[in-house]
Image (cartoon, rainbow, N blue to C red; front, side):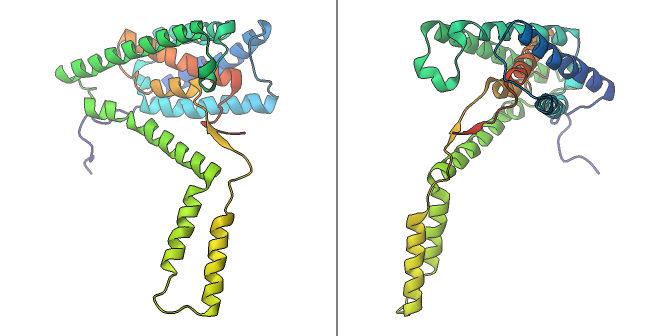
Length: 274
């Protein structure tokens, strides 16, 4: 049966040997090495039991498989990416250990000036790299490369993390305010109304429904959105899919910083309970 997708529009790839090398370089060696080096130099590391360490490595394998296949790393994985990965892994850790850089997005209102300067430089670098990748996708389509992917599809994939973040926000609001539950009870109450004069039992039921609506309370724990740097750079890693040295460097940097986040703290959730 002919594929419903136009040729070149979907560029997933998997090759066993590159995938094994990918895991050896970016998980089996990188994760323990980071924990060891971080412990020696007293870097900020969450305390982990052996079970926690194993779970973190399995998370790296799971997330790594997804990005390896969808990001086309079977074609682009090479020594350039490995070198840039380890430079980013330990370089980002050194930056994060600077006293003024020990911040998170949650504390942005209290960031010192030097942290804002560092953040602006990082955003500028990301935008510069994004512009270069847009140039690559345009050039690739103009040259009719066999690996070309439509620019609309490439950029349109940015909608996916936005959709996931939107769902996260909805779930946060539901946990904190129960707005969906209240809306549901309101709708149920409307549809239960009858044009005729209600009986005594129906009046009692309506009163119970109203009381239930009033008594709906938020859950015991408050949810909040916390975007972690591992999530940001993991997302970037899906877009550094070009067989070009600059894109391979960008892929290594993205994977290195994502791995640093999981190596130091673990795969913390987008929604946190406090």
